[in-house]
Length: 178
Picture 1: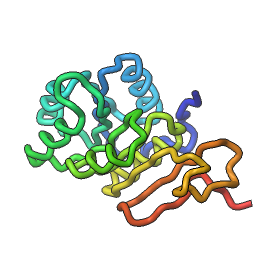
Picture 2 (picture 1 turned 60 degrees about the vertical axis):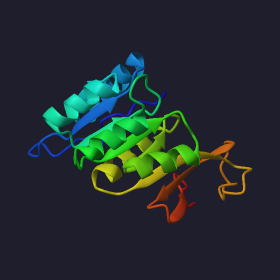
Picture 3 (picture 1 turned 90 degrees about the vertical axis):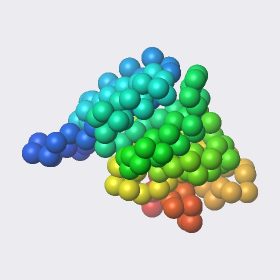
């Protein structure tokens, strides 16, 4: 896939690096995501399960938690609930393969601030990280061009990325005026 790259994404050298905790039981994905986030100027912490994630969050309080839903032991939804139970206000962005509106609703209902599927382009992930870290709530799902919910029939691929912010408005992401 396309790397994040660092052009235009370098943080202000005076400002401290944003600290992101990435929680995923897939070690290969965890290493790749960590590398790419560090390349974009973030400080990255990692956890491979819910128990170590809770300990890391309580000790180091990251600026953002990037969290997979499907993990052994404590599920992603349960982990979100536990973090919120400890009154830790850190924004949580769910990053998962589950491209389902119901899963997104459950994650947001448990206290997540955003929901993004792993099949999105790196630029979409970076934009979602920035928006979620800034306190915005968003959902990014891939919707078939032929489904009722899509209004992106002009895209050349069979899928369109749809961003729902605050659950109120839908806009095509990546559409460019010609």
